[in-house]
Image (tube, rainbow, N blue to C red; front, side, top):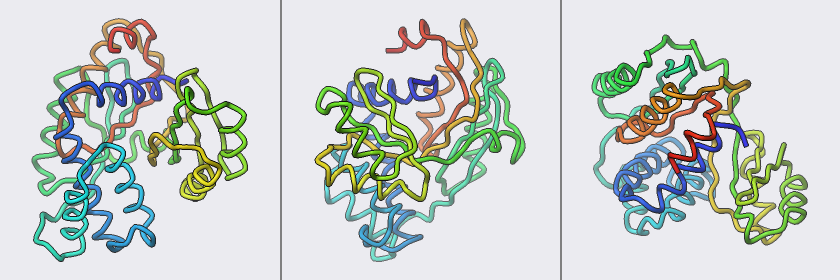
Length: 248
């Protein structure tokens, strides 16, 4: 499993164990609100909203919170008008970073992102400086302790998935963006329970990072994750196994 996926796995585990549920809910509520604003409040006819709602339910967000966020997006309740924005830059070791944000104040957000990058040896880049290094993909996670490899592989590939990886604990199913929803539907119909699913950006190639650079990078990723306006951070880092093990 590539370095960026290992870090995503660590974040999923930490999300269960640490006291960050409130911050996670803040990010999820913003995504639900924007998804409803852009595509309407019915998840059956709004793929982005459906994904956001499924993610919120998987994180045990109360149904009332989800409903209020949808109504804020559709205008039935008063809410904040969030803007989607992205930032590109570099972290320790020269790794590329693509940062997705939802904000009501872009001046605040860019200042927070620039401060985080500078604090841990990174720098903010210009638009387009690193985006070309990433491909937009869908990724679906299945618990490998609950389902057999053959069953998951068959259901995913028959549904149109591009790839299935197994690290012994999780199956990681990768799809094209256009097939993302269809693959999930096919897997569910085949009886496969999905632990999580997201649209992400996968690096075309990776940069090996070890030692102090790897330690600083993990601190930077944690710091960025703490910023309310930051929704997702994508990296092309292949982080040293020893440093990742300590982060676990």
